[in-house]
Image (cartoon, rainbow, N blue to C red; front, side, top):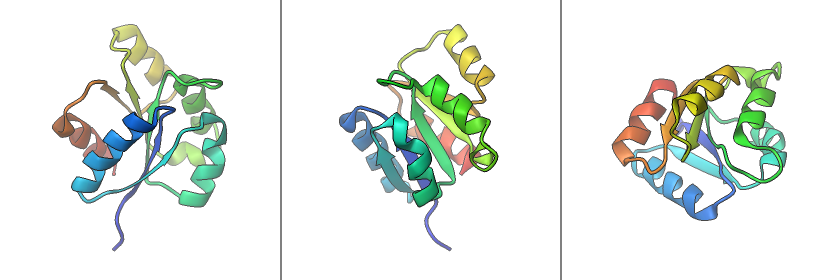
Length: 121
């Protein structure tokens, strides 16, 4: 059995590195993309079991990306957890409306991140 692959989509390399280090320490195989416009191509190549998705990104925001992925015939089955500094109930509601399976507020603890990841991966 191989490691569970998790795709991180965050336009901030520092945020992506933080997520990667937490996931690696817990035995996951994280891969990152910083460009939301190429996430579909990255999914085709990497075939992740779970996607961690930032909201505030240039071009396509995380809500748009989530909606697009969830309406895709093949990618729609992959769980998406939104990772955002937006912590309002309306943000969480909107993420769910776009198809998000989970929601983590930044800044997060490693324990909170891993608990959410374990629900899906």
